[in-house]
Image 1: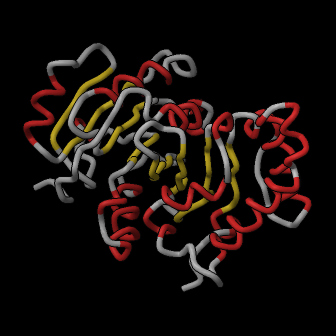
Image 2: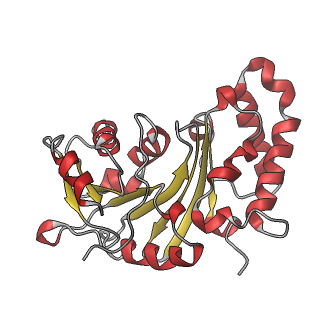
Length: 258
């Protein structure tokens, strides 16, 4: 039996473009001998697996995407859209694949948001147990049109990094991401928790960088991230990623305190 519960299945065109772009650049995908990627819980249509495949082709022309859904009727409808490199099947967190194959990436977006926080660790553990050596689970949440996203990069040892990705052109405050934090963090945005401290400092750095708005929101965001780093936050990557509206930190920098 599939492991998990049927969720609302909300989906939409171009909604997951930010995380797709991040996965396309991930070393695990680029180095994989078998570039098999799973879109777990793709929802009521085949849109997101098809888009994921199209975007990843630029990094790996031999990529294969399997969409997995727990609701049989969604799978039946999606199979009508199958094409070379993209297939669909029934399943859940156990990630059933033929021939004992293991994915290098599992993307599970807007799935655990609908579960209890207490279920997150076990769900992560089950999904990562299905990965190839060196593979990653990318688990997170975004808004309905993909302008506000965040996710956790998890491997068999546990969570590794936390990433925020925002559309800068319409950004008022970076802390808007509080509404779209992964399930493991969304209830931790309270005084005394690390993720709360991050969002407070992020808004402060954004305000300090306001004079750079005359040069555009990208320059303001880059200065914001540099300000965070100068303030002691262990920011990853560099300007190439920051200019996309991204901010990545080690998981330990935001992990819940209990």
